[in-house]
Length: 137
Image (cartoon, rainbow, N blue to C red; front, side, top):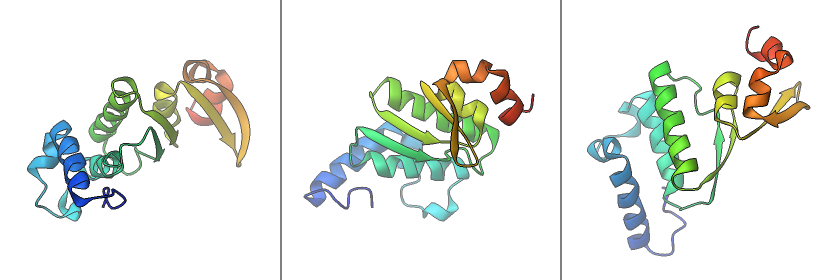
């Protein structure tokens, strides 16, 4: 599905093969339905589906939701690699404030849908108000 908007099916196949080379675990499971993949593998599949279109910007909504801690770490490592190795810009919404701010170059803290704070991820992680509101201390 990630290659649906490509001009030719061959372009979609080529882009998909490139992504599967980057993430061999998906390549090993390519004949299986998405529903039998683990939560982390499904999240990797979602990201990979977007990468087939070769975007400059990725919009990522709640990448850690519903995942076991080991898969959360894997997903953030993939996003970090995309950002720092491939130069992708990543715009992320993440309720796991600590994980999101550890990843963020720039972070925005919303309270009841309104902007409450903005700064670098590091600044916000160290801000006692953010800690009180979202990080449990």
